[in-house]
Amino acid sequence: MNKEIPYKIYLEESEMPKSWYNLRADMKNKPAPLLNPKTFEPMTYEDLRPVFCDELIRQELDDQTAYIPIPDEIRNFYKMYRPAPLVRAYCLEEKLQTPAKIYYKFEGNNTSGSHKLNSAIAQAYYAKKQGLKGVTTETGAGQWGTALSMACAYLGLDCNVFMVKVSYEQKPFRREVMRTYGASVTPSPSETTKVGREILKKHPGTGGSLGCAISEAVESASEREGYRYVLGSVLNQVMLHQSIIGLETKAALDKYGVVPDIIIGCAGGGSNLGGLIAPFMGEKLRGERDYRFIAVEPASCPSLTRGKFAYDYCDTGMVCPLSKMYTLGSGFIPSSSHSGGLRYHGMNSVLSQLYDDGLMEAVSVEQTSVFEAAQMFAKVEGILPAPESSHAIRVAINEALKCKETGEEKTIVFGLTGTGYFDMVAYQKYNDGLMSDYIPTDEDLAVGFAGLPIVPEK
Image: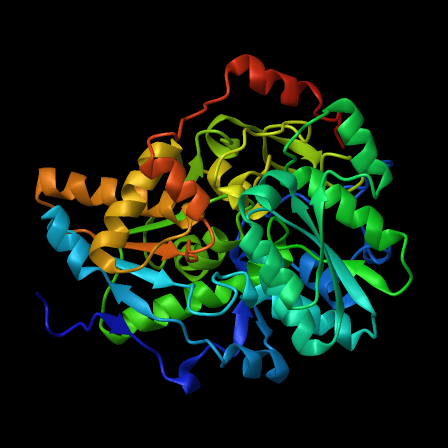
């Protein structure tokens, strides 16, 4: 065991980043702009104002400024749980008998249980600063809704959450945490919005999807004075806030002169993966250093590995702007897997562009193999991981076993985005042997692709 590197590498409070890093500033091929779904023209600041907070729109549209200062009020909130630890997985290495060195950035050391709080407090802060009454949002597995309810309670904002119905039913305790912090929680699709009623009419009995919940949250915000819509992933503003994960990870590794070979993250909408890889990808884009990046997605919702790179609606109700991304089609409703946070039909436009440019890889994995990895990790590392995070664990283990076969001493870093203590229904299904794998057929995917909008070429 290498005694020089501790199990947990902590940065000092004074070493916490003072700015977020905007990866787009270093991209030669910028992500395509959001388009107005009616005119197909690039969305402007004024176009987005009825839905989003003013400062967040500026961050969303800014692809030139490399570093955006973090307001002191947000940094002071971060100090309650940041800097987060970077952990050397010595016990997992021993279990695998691999020459690989494995590190994970642990983002579950806060009450919300995940990385989502990094952006929730930022978005709530800008809403409060703008003088708004409250915000509406969607949540998949519930981590984002939990984080936002905490942030809103801290700042005195009203919080309305549309929670994907299958997760609402599978994860009642996470729902109750949100309510404890004062949020209202509605299972989506619901009868409370026009778009929700339309989705239920078209898909009776559906368990919903993040795309459905987004549509309802946007409609709810647009019809209430003093409210705006905020979201936990997909858009560039969120990935910007999550860059604090990668900035801290890099600073911790630099302290000990460690240079990773492979960086791995689970991928749903893309915020945590994008945040983790941001400063490393920036080095790659600038030609300073090379890394291998791997996005891991569920086989049941394979937007990168089986999707199309095209303009698509960000939501099922087709009320949001069009984003050019790897997508399965906004009408694609994934199976009721236990990784609710990864059940989104598309991928962040920055990550989609990087993937299309061959700068990162993507793999999909079945949920039974994910939970096998989660159980192994829990036994040897002492943390029960969230199902979403366990996708990254699965591939980190796979890569470490490859090193065992070849004898290569590669350094692997992955993101442990949250804990799984509210996901016990999923773990029960796995332990009872009742968990199954669903992989959509080409025919299933064709239904979603058929609904892609036809965008005129400029």
